Amino acid sequence: DLVYAEIDERMVKFHMADVSAPVRKSRMALRELENQLEDDGFLRIHNSFLVNMSYIAALQTSGVTLTTGQVLPVSLHGYKAIKMKYMAWRGRG
Image (cartoon, rainbow, N blue to C red; front, side, top):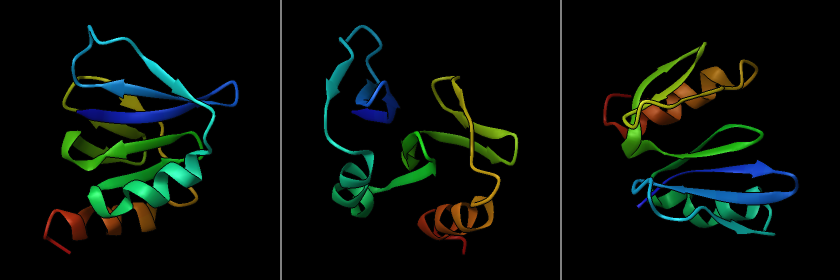
């Protein structure tokens, strides 16, 4: 399962739930990946991060805490829209 994807030196790195799995990389644009996965519960939380909402434990202006324990930055500029999308996905908005 894909937990999140991030941009690193113009490459998309895929972070899986199985931390022992090798990190895969691709030259595709994060925007392209976002378009492919948005209907599958993925949310763009920052210019550099696309997150599987199933793994979000907490969403705050200070960052997104994942169920894996990692904390990723969240765009302050887009926080309101990000929160609305997340809450709608969770069935609360």
